[in-house]
Image (cartoon, rainbow, N blue to C red; front, side, top):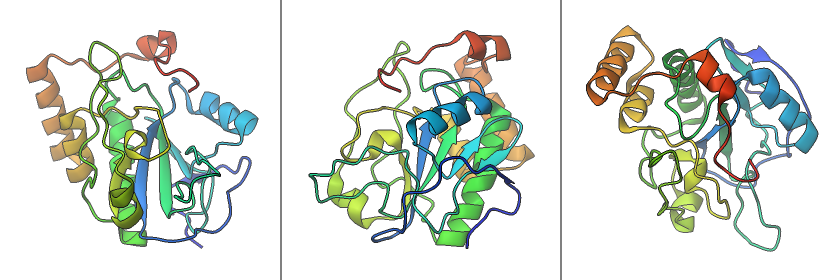
Length: 218
């Protein structure tokens, strides 16, 4: 059993069964919505539960990480597994085309350190860093190399997973740096300083409520 001790347990529609192979890896998604509750409703309706949802208020675990989640597309006709390939999946409340809230990233970083320690996940991005949005849109040219996905532990975005078409989480370089070095006040100060230099303001709660997804079918 692998339940995060500092996460709230929120069971929804359940997992996809046992993993077929390893090594373990972390997959980052964005919910393309502004609230965790809205994400929960989507999981329930579509049966696409991740292991975790994270927002600025907390961390919510839906599936024991000893079992597979359901948030990735998997083509039955293809031999490559996605959900079942020891993929621990995190849905980050927010949008791919907008900056992520600092408090949310703090919680994601804290969760990542627990997953890395619990499942021996490498702290690197084997298919490269996620690409941030360009003019609010998909930047394209994402590396979804299947051999890397099959064999290498580490962090992946939804944008890096074979058979999938979505381009989240679209973290910026400063957001990735924070996630790899955080949590903690020093890392958060560095993120905020970087955003000031780059003139990238953190989205307000009102902006998040009014935003819509730029990904069809998400």
